[in-house]
Amino acid sequence: MGFEKFGRKSFASQTKVESFVEYLAKGELSGTQCKSCGKQYFPPRADCAECLGNEMDWFKIEGTGNLVSFTKAGFAPTGFEADVPYTLALADFNGIKVFGRLDSSIPKEEVSVGMALQINILNLPDGQLSYEFVKS
Ligand SMILES: [Zn+2]
Picture 1 (cartoon, protein in one colour):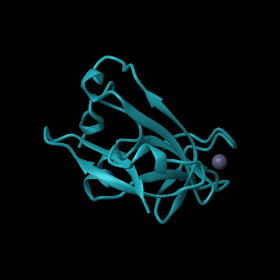
Picture 2 (cartoon, protein in one colour; picture 1 turned 135 degrees about the vertical axis):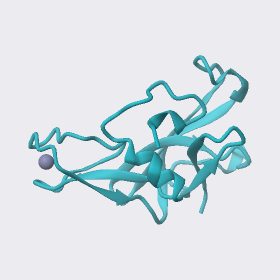
Picture 3 (tube, helix red, strand yellow; picture 1 turned 180 degrees about the horizontal axis):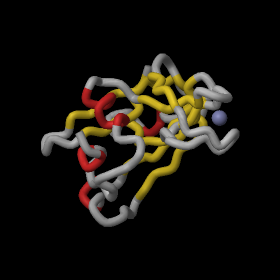
Picture 4 (cartoon, protein in one colour; picture 1 turned 120 degrees about the horizontal axis):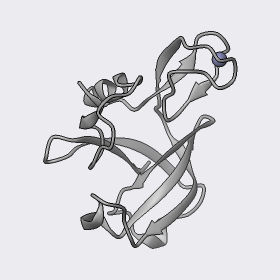
């Protein structure tokens, strides 16, 4: 399965981390971990910036995270115009920082830094795969 299946609009059809999409199809959000030094990456990287190793394992990002920061997008890049407004968020899952969208059904008065979040894998109507953060 190619990387073009990821997201509402994918800008890359081939990457060195295509397995990311296969894990998404199985309902898992995954990052990579360097086999040499153990550094973990999200988004997944095929090459380690720490030790320059290029052998990676995949690990599942799971459990409960905490909202670190967020912003509401009122304008969107090409391909996402129909989605605005939406909230972009950075969440921490056991030290792994994950960037994504916040579930749009969360009332805005409930959105606050530190709130507990979980990852929800999205199977979009057009067959694309993505993920979002939902309230834990
Ligand atoms: Zn490394």
